[in-house]
Amino acid sequence: MVKIASWNINSVRLRIDQVERLLTEQAPDVLCLQEIKVAEPLFPHAMFERLGYTHRAIHGQKGYHGVATVSKIPFTEFSRHDWQDNGEARHVGVELHGAGQGLILENVYIPAGGDIADRAVNPKFGQKLDFLGRMTRWADKIDRPTLIVGDFNIAPLECDVYDHKALLKVVSHTPIEVEALGAFRDAHGWVDLGRRFIPAPERNYSWWSYRSYWREKDQGRRLDHMWASPDLAPQARAHRFIEETRRWESPSDHVPLITEFDL
Image 1: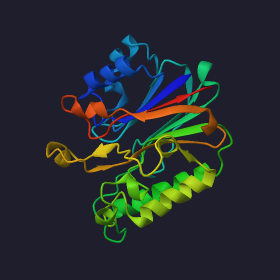
Image 2: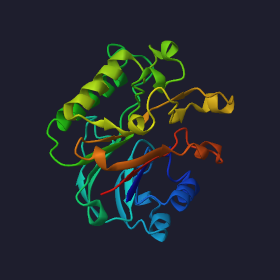
Image 3: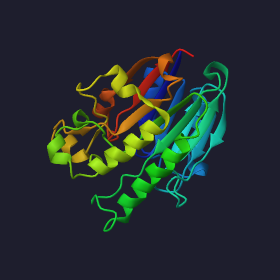
Image 4: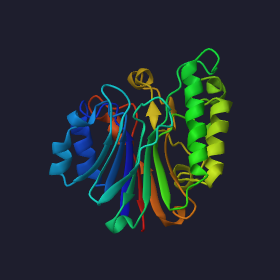
């Protein structure tokens, strides 16, 4: 079994103790982090090295965005796509070796898209839609077992948010975003592992705003995802989200996801 985790950590240096706790308690073989908010020279390599995550692919930048894939399983860095088309560090892909048997693992941080769901007045929203369009054209050409994970910043189903009607005009759940993500899904027939193992309409949130967290309101959204290519999906054996991290000191606003594969 190969255990793969994904977590928007919202600053890996600020929450390095939490990352260490997750790695110690859950022992994934591979961890994909988003929003690491650090350039590669300042990435906290020492802790990962100490715990045996000796293989690392870091695509970071100073203070913002950034993704990192760390692994006990050997891998080769496979790609770094600029789907944002502006140089931001939002993707890294690796090819697993050993127990991974050639699996391609894509780690992505899709832009949030700002506050207004209109590209005419909010360029960030347009950038998000264009990012999804470039991802969709890329997915058309995939010809190997692939897992794409990360913070998609979209809750696609009505039950993926705490109040569907209230959020229809809120960025992350608008019909145009859901349609764009659906086009990406259909481009390669991706299998949404979160909903394969936790079927709709079961609660399956991965993000809560800090404001609702401190009010102790369960106003969550399912923004984080693990999607498998059709040839990989049958090998997935278990999937869960690790919600107890919300109770850790100074938590991320996202919780980790973990999927186990029989490879």
